Length: 99
Image (cartoon, one colour):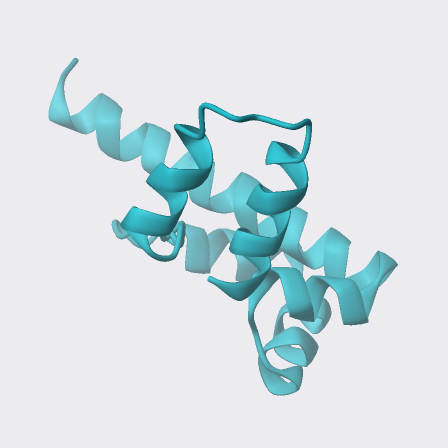
């Protein structure tokens, strides 16, 4: 895969992500703020951005997606628990909420 194609895909991913973030904020602001770990000011800014502004921001050659999986040891312990009691999804949700 060429570098230009990779950058092009990154820009497309950025725009899709920003549009999704804006939609989440508009539909359920409090949940979006909690799940995206953003503050009120940033939520206001993104919610009020035009399509042109979102596109301009998305054209930056940096990824807006940041892996935020919390503690590696805790995540590994949840995923490799041999005594899975049907609570793995709950434990993962709790872990991700605190990450």
